[in-house]
Length: 220
Image (cartoon, rainbow, N blue to C red):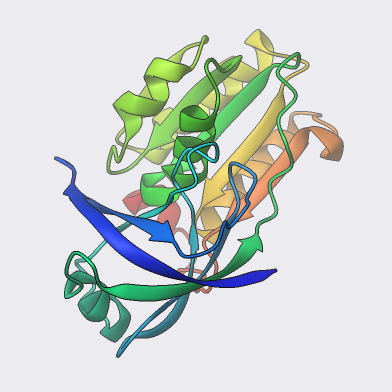
């Protein structure tokens, strides 16, 4: 893994409450779309993030919500253009996508970030997109997919969409991203439907605690 300084270039707020921070690295930081790194902010400490930038541009971008008001989020929100942070990367558990294979992306809220980087790093995706919760970056990722793109407000309607998509795309690789309990619940649904483990790929929010049982069903 490489350690490098990042200089803040732009800050962009989305209409859904997410904020994207784009940095110029002092030294090239190579990453695979869907990977991320540890971001170290002066006065805020360190936190792992998925990179959301196109991995062909040389830039490093992260996206997050700032509502928690944590020490890290306050320090991140307080950065000005030209300020520096540091990054250690790349790390991440999602495998490379084979463009010849069919894929299904399932995301919860800001868990869209690995799919945002994948969408930005490829000209077209042979994928179906299923999203639940706050629709962060949904439209941008949906435009890059060749299959259906569905946003759901409730977990039960998402589960029904997953059932339909298993039938529609029987040989697809499934990529799951969100809170640990959300990812685990989706993986169980896929396994119970008979999908082999080799077709199920999981990415969870690093450092996030699992919520109380049943939380993802009511508040995804």
